[in-house]
Image 1 (cartoon, rainbow, N blue to C red):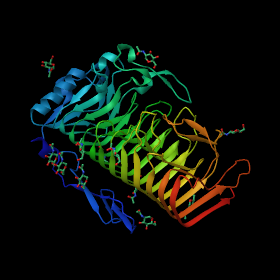
Image 2 (spheres, protein in one colour):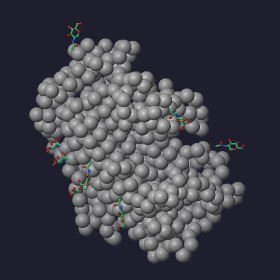
Image 3 (spheres, rainbow, N blue to C red):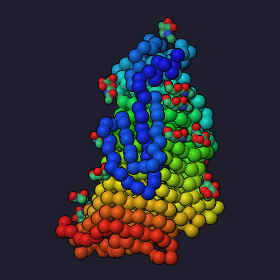
Image 4 (cartoon, rainbow, N blue to C red):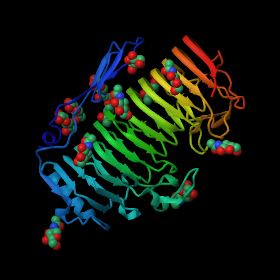
Length: 487
Ligand SMILES: *[C@@H]1O[C@H](CO)[C@@H](O)[C@H](O)[C@H]1NC(C)=O
Ligand SMILES: *[C@@H]1O[C@H](CO)[C@@H](O)[C@H](O)[C@H]1NC(C)=O
Ligand SMILES: *[C@@H]1O[C@H](CO)[C@@H](O)[C@H](O)[C@H]1NC(C)=O
Ligand SMILES: *[C@@H]1O[C@H](CO)[C@@H](O)[C@H](O)[C@H]1NC(C)=O
Ligand SMILES: *[C@@H]1O[C@H](CO)[C@@H](O)[C@H](O)[C@H]1NC(C)=O
Ligand SMILES: *[C@@H]1O[C@H](CO)[C@@H](O)[C@H](O)[C@H]1NC(C)=O
Ligand SMILES: *[C@@H]1O[C@H](CO)[C@@H](O)[C@H](O)[C@H]1NC(C)=O
Ligand SMILES: *[C@@H]1O[C@H](CO)[C@@H](O)[C@H](O)[C@H]1NC(C)=O
Ligand SMILES: *[C@@H]1O[C@H](CO)[C@@H](O)[C@H](O)[C@H]1NC(C)=O
Ligand SMILES: *[C@@H]1O[C@H](CO)[C@@H](O)[C@H](O)[C@H]1NC(C)=O
Ligand SMILES: *[C@@H]1O[C@H](CO)[C@@H](O)[C@H](O)[C@H]1NC(C)=O
Ligand SMILES: *[C@@H]1O[C@H](CO)[C@@H](O)[C@H](O)[C@H]1NC(C)=O
């Protein structure tokens, strides 16, 4: 049976912390076991553990006549191997070293694609390589499948550079496939890997490279494990997201490296809520947000943990960008190292290490809420300050910052002094730089916060804390330091 082939190893236990008002010691003894005792209510995400299966039928795509020459399309042979594997009750479909040019591959229940080291699955670059419906444009897609996975140490390559119409250091201009009317605008490009409505998904030990649009997309899934995955997008390509988790429950992401242009890890809610997401031990560089909740946020988010993450030279670090009426609660960010800097303003982000907003997208949007958010053990070096901005209908409640170490320094030539409310909302607004800008907050607790300001007379730093008492209530500062330092 497929399940017994795929998930025969012991389970990973993840103790996901739910917030309360107390903090206690924390230990992370090994990468697969995360124990958090910060809480009165500790919850556990229990996921099947992925590992290379042992006892299963194997189906070599080469035995199904795939050439792996990188010139001829291997689509029908790869698909025949997948179909045969699924019909046999599941197993592995193996890609030995070679380059497999292909149109969309439909992954089926019970099947694990094993793309071996030296093997590369190369996505086609023509509209006819992808299904009719734009929402199914992926190089590899699984729909309503159970017990599916991708591994093997090899590469899936979307040939994203072939979709660049004009190379631009600031932001590439991309091809649009909207001519069929399937979709509109420049976001009309294929994604790389998609799991739609799946259960028990594992993606591990694989490199995902050069997506034309988003890279790894998990939609309406339950029990997804993503680990030891490297994602290399293009730093100048818009919408080159890393991992988009949408309307899905019980997702664990660990030991991933993401270097890309757009949002690196991006939980979204379009058609349903998102519960229980744990992201640990990752390294991220992006020209947009490293972590971003939203901006699609029609439904609720609950029970998210981001721990031990390194964010380098990104445009924004930790972002909660709630625009559409969803409510976010019980989210922890712990042990995170951040450096953020300015890039071209056509990219959302203004070098904020932390960015939290509920400003509704437009006048028709409801305001969502953000509550019970803990930031603990965060070190950041950034060109701009923290931005915390609720809205009249969506006050930020119970935000806690513990052990924060902020260094503010300028090292690029981009102009500062702008607050970025995009998308929608108020857009870009002039506002002097501050350590933390606060708007529409009820309940903010700070314990051990250090702000260090580079001693650079030319840079016009402003207030450490910037708020109007009329919209901000119940602030509690314990052990707060702010001062300049010599660069
Ligand atoms: C925060 O850091 C301190 C000091 O390194 C450590 O003792 C504590 O366990 C950390 N807390 C969390 C929640 O990781
Ligand atoms: C979230 O995780 C907790 C703890 O494992 C579990 O009790 C709960 O059912 C999960 N929620 C969903 C929607 O699966
Ligand atoms: C998710 O995994 C857990 C642990 O293996 C299992 O008990 C549960 O049935 C799975 N949920 C689904 C929807 O497959
Ligand atoms: C592979 O090609 C051989 C020789 O043309 C043919 O006999 C065989 O049926 C093909 N196998 C598949 C799975 O298409
Ligand atoms: C990844 O797969 C390769 C090839 O099978 C293997 O040698 C390597 O040990 C795997 N790495 C991990 C972290 O599983
Ligand atoms: C394709 O998108 C572009 C950019 O948004 C737009 O100008 C054009 O009208 C669209 N064309 C079609 C056929 O949708
Ligand atoms: C997911 O895997 C778990 C553990 O092997 C199994 O109990 C559960 O039935 C699977 N879910 C589905 C929908 O296959
Ligand atoms: C996630 O859990 C919520 C709450 O139980 C449920 O409403 C939703 O349908 C679940 N989503 C999926 C994809 O299973
Ligand atoms: C933190 O993540 C890095 C990988 O980014 C890993 O090398 C390190 O061991 C992790 N630390 C802990 C305490 O798990
Ligand atoms: C968010 O919370 C508000 C207030 O409790 C509620 O009216 C609204 O329906 C919630 N939004 C969602 C998407 O559940
Ligand atoms: C704060 O961060 C700076 C710069 O990264 C570092 O030199 C300093 O040791 C940190 N201080 C603490 C208390 O962690
Ligand atoms: C900033 O501008 C100065 C003067 O024009 C130039 O020398 C320097 O290289 C620029 N720095 C960066 C990081 O672009």
